[in-house]
Length: 195
Image 1 (cartoon, rainbow, N blue to C red):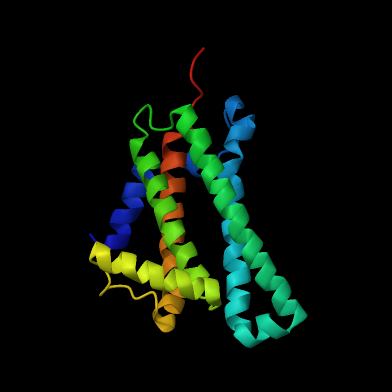
Image 2 (cartoon, one colour):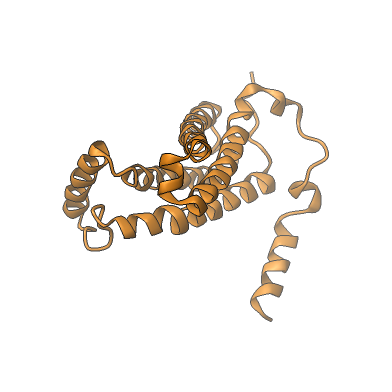
């Protein structure tokens, strides 16, 4: 059996078509508490689109051209919306007890997603190459050295930070989001506490 066949069988066993693309959702999902995850997901799509456009245009384009600056601002505000929605999603799911009923894996993957997104945000902040980001880069380098991972990631190396921010970390975040959505679809959205 090859890897593709094994993956197809595993998906068929754990996720039905109705789970993957539901036609009806439970009534309790109509609450605003269930909106923040979708907001974070849509802002992530906005970040990917604006980030690809910024990468294609290059720094000269988004620093000197009004259209480039527009997409730079879209990317900046997309990050703000993404993190606000992510923290609101985390808070609402914490108070809903999202780890209940065997959903601990979904909760842990979501926590991993938050940590990965914060690291991705740090790499993006370092790419601004202004005085603030240079100060943060030197402080972060000291923190990386103190944690013993300074040899793996150098915040002062712009090429390394650029590759992480534009290629590696978006793929990692997208993969974790995909796993998180798979787990949510497989186990269904968490029910509110019974009165």
